[in-house]
Length: 316
Image 1: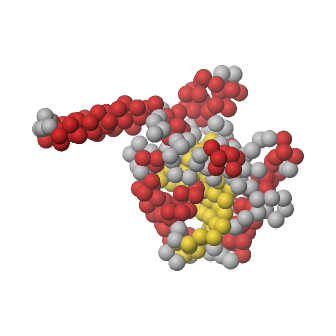
Image 2: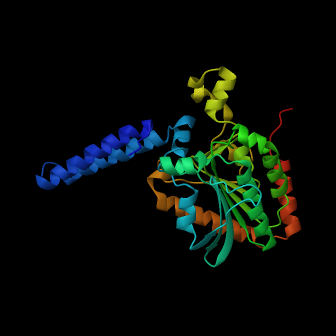
């Protein structure tokens, strides 16, 4: 198992409690009341640990290897799906996936960033760092959704766009800027969910939408804490300080109007209960679609434009 530092004492206690129960089944030593008391202590420990998580603890949760990825949501939420490949210009970028999906007889187009689960799939998916052709694919598929009046769901989970020389040679910066420009004008509802890491322009390039939501322990920031520490302090050991300064957790972003909704995660993080987070995700999609399906397209685009024009708070 991949146990995070703040989870260790909880898992140790759970393991000990499990052994006590096994021993009790073989030879009655502990009374039911004593077992119940130990279980209550475990619940108190969980509440204490999970209520005092630092921003870096929560970033560790957003990066947990067992956290559901985009493909997990697609496979578990939608009843029918057909993948769409390629940008029609260069090649198919495996770090961005796109599907025509169906849920409860309603069609959706899903564009998503996928990191991969193990070493082989992470390399195959380029660790979730898209190339220019990936963003072109995403935009091509979103334009297809617009043509057939199908709502769009965009899933964000990236440490950032690929920053290698090849990506710069193929116009990474221009492609990201063009996506922002084009997504602002797409004439169909767009629902964005940041399910893990939402870092830099690589995330923003697919995050222009009518409703922006974040999972409780995901993060959304112009730069990672590690990158910020390296630039501001010349010391990557100051990640804790950077993560607090950046205000990259969901509650701060909601307070400042950068996102619209926070999707609650299972106690301790989405990696601990996949089914529960899938249900919460379904509810968010259902509620968002019901709210926006009747919108006049002119009103929809004006509302989207004003939403992003009004982001930010200024001190006089």
